[in-house]
Amino acid sequence: MTDRTVFDYMMFLQAAARASGPAAACLRLAEQEYVELCLSRAILDEIRDVLGRPRLRQRFRTLTDERVGAFLDRLARIGHVWDDVPASVTLKRDPKDEKYLNLAVAVDAKYLVSRDNDLLDLRTGGSTVSQSLARLCPNLRILDPVEFLRAFQTSELGTTSADGPEPPSS
Image 1 (tube, rainbow, N blue to C red):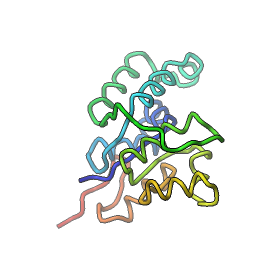
Image 2: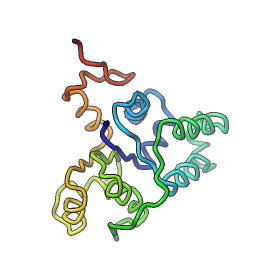
Image 3: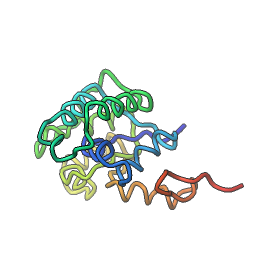
Image 4: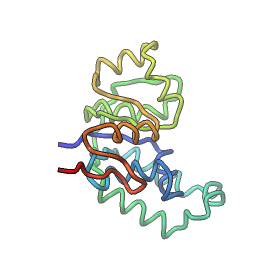
């Protein structure tokens, strides 16, 4: 069984906008089944909303209707969607991020990958939220995309290239 992994919306935006960046390389790990990409309906709705915003489409010209549609189809193929995700964590600092934490808890994720400081700051263990999260999901590691890729470079999976990890040699 592969490690269950949750990405926040910024990972999906960056992966959709730039196929050569770290977020896209992280998504390829899921596509190649090195990790299990976990999604919820709320996360899919946010991705759809974000990728359709005119201001972002103007900034990232590659986000055409066709490319966004193909990207969402890709997520539907490679991701596993949970319909009912109970609310177990409250994040007053940024309630919009609760959906990622709650999904991570619900699926007992090993990784939550984000560039969002509201989520990354939970790694320190000093807040009551991070302590609660540690009790609810003790194996969860919150990493930024580069740290996530580095974790695979140093694991038994082999080394990570721009196209994803290379299987270990026998």
